[in-house]
Length: 295
Image 1 (cartoon, one colour):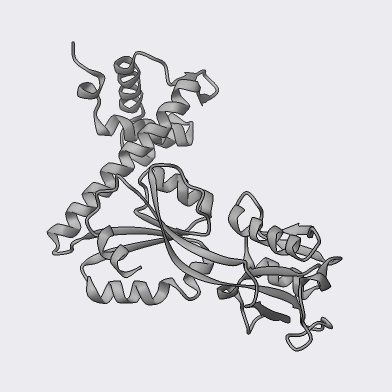
Image 2 (image 1 turned 60 degrees about the vertical axis):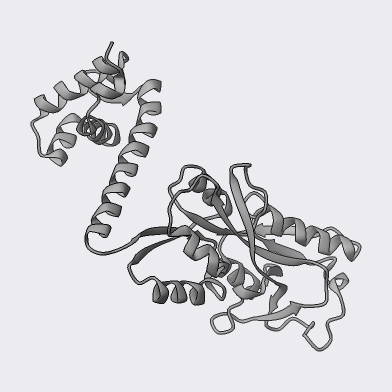
């Protein structure tokens, strides 16, 4: 008996993806530069090989059924892996040594990562770096799917198949409106802000950071009143600038030039924020080890 994988062709996956993403055979055929009848025949052949219908078709519309939605996820994963492998092969053919895919939270690119990436690029000029800004949660998912090689995140709550390495620790910093009566000179402790409204990164995006803020406030006898949340530092700065509340950020995120806000670095407190490097323990990309040596 011939297995399904021996019967499947890569082009059938690409044809299916085109139809699934457009839900229109004519448009998909035009994109693929084949006839609509040829496309239809290939989709029917694919469904025959799989032994299940992937698309619900009527005279008016095409839609993905449950099997089709599940198969689309796998088809995208397979074609992406093939494309990545071919890219790797071409780079090696051209005299390059490989590709390293790096994800990061925004604060990692302010101080920590740029000198490391510059050093890496100088030391290994034939390795192509692919950079992508992702949230902590999205980095963990990408590492599990092996769509990135390494992530730089502000959480140590990861799955058992990921490895962690503390990369950079820094202070937390208060962000206040420019005209706020508390300055670096008269600041004593966080109890001064027990009645203030806080603007923070959401708990679900940065749970470790969020817990550090809660701990800091608890150490000073209060629980923060959280009025607004944002995943983007510029939004937080703009809200603080307009008197919508105060915030606490990693010190490396401060922007001293573009906002009418004041910063007070909290150097003498127990709470610090740590940036972690994370990677999949099953990752076999040899160029990953070169970066880990620099971190």
